[in-house]
Amino acid sequence: MEKRRDNRIRKKVPVRFYFEGTAFHSITGDMSRRGIFIETLHPCPPGKGINIEIDGKNQKISLAGFIRWNKRDSESPAMSPAGGMGVQLLNYQKPEYQSLVSEIY
Image 1: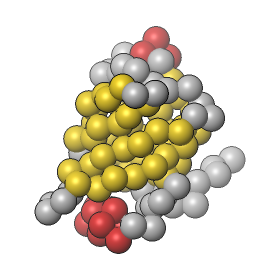
Image 2: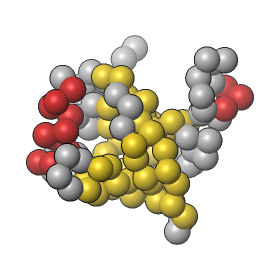
Image 3: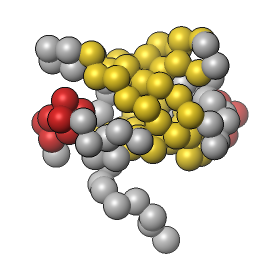
Image 4: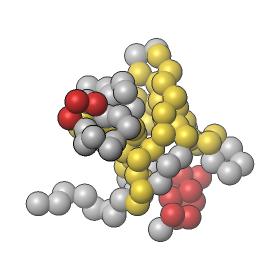
């Protein structure tokens, strides 16, 4: 049973996320109005918070997120470049983020 409120659209956007004082460079796998899937070799544990930066058209978009789930590389399909994590955004209503997402819908 699908629990998502919004459709996710495959979109590759460079992203940086910060977890426990460490910065990681990665890419999004898909995006929605309230969440992001981040492809990464270093998925964070579910239940933890992270900070995210996305380079928007004219500015950096800073977001806070909550890890809902993750998958390690060994669980990923053979064609997938890495594991990743599903992030529920806590401040998704920021106009600069909603503007970015509205471009892909």
